[in-house]
Image (tube, rainbow, N blue to C red; front, side, top):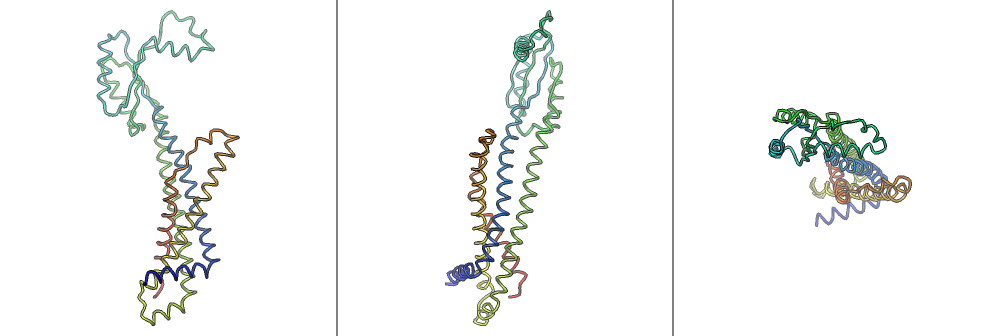
Length: 291
């Protein structure tokens, strides 16, 4: 009975104080929209950054005149390393053929060569967790100690850039989420506080009738969560409109925008986040009021 009364009271308050609640819902929706758009862009940047390690490789150059057995021994030793996801052996002949294809428009550069100046090599790809500047350096130094390997090249700057990009994405998303969430909590806090004072006489009457603090607080908690929920729903609508505007309108000018992905998890997470932030704001507001 008390729960049905709380929902009925909260619904009546939402309708009675509709302009305050509508303003609060749109404010919450705007804040959650910013979170959604940030998550949308960071999600797509994360997808791109996750593919960057796949393009990163370490190249181990082999000494000249190695026998087939010696080369295979080196390959077997590398395959045993847990950091390596796959490797590819490139012979001197394959290396010069690839260079000729790359320089097909300026092939005359190679015409004066009497012999193949390139070395056989092994292209090594690392697991994503090891594509950092420090890990790549350490692995390269260890590989260089293997007998038969002449030199090792790894893109230190590339590895460092990939690592810093992923860390920056994580840090930015955390900062934005905490900042906007604080704003949503403050909006709900202010709204519930205003609604409480507007119903102060009604609250005093039901207190005289023996109402408990929990009974009094429940409608405000429901109202705060409702503001957060509807704000989340409007935030989703705004985010979807933005997404379709980008992928269907702007993609005519910039075709690459068609590849952007909208994370479907947001459709559930945003209203839930709105409800939780609404409840937190309501709890803080009611905790500072004397009942």
